[in-house]
Length: 180
Length: 106
Image (cartoon, rainbow over the protein chains, first blue to last red):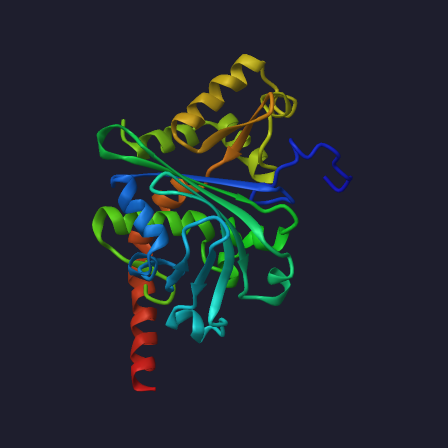
């Protein structure tokens, strides 16, 4: 894997390697509408994962910002932790946006990545949420989002965020950074 | 069978754990690629991948004519948060209580 790969289609990036796409999926006992709200409104985004308020203009070209929670600020986070642009918004089914983490200069320098949320209703009151993160050209960010930087204080990435989201929607229990 | 049962069953087989390790090392692979690294028939690998897909540990995506397999670590995280945390909780809450107390005094 130290050689140069020439087939971009098959050279995706898994959590442990220079891959390009991470796919995370979870089934949540909640309606698609509630999951859409949980992803796009501050009322919910402050209560799971890395926390923080969300500003999002849900139309193509609209801005996206995730603001630092008080706990993240204590870790020295900037006011705006993630910025990006909405590419496609089809509530409550699909959200495509660009996504750039500003916590760390080296990661911010990797630039914008592409994030897709797919929300699909299932039988029995469950909804399937699939988060695909195209991390082409962002190997440092990929370690964080894959949860591999957890031991270094980077949090558990998407697996942890989605586990916390499921827990919040199903039980009302909050799991946020710095609020264990 | 519950979701947890499916995950534990999927993880209970060495070949399936190997397939997950292969995807961990490099994600988004085709059946042909995976098959080349496992000493097993194509049919055998397909059967194991099916069990991993049923447990949602592997998610497939189409890319042109190819079907790519991605490792989905979320079910393992759910088990971690559901089971492992339970047994380590006491030490962790002691530390977070201390942190909170110190911060309130500050």
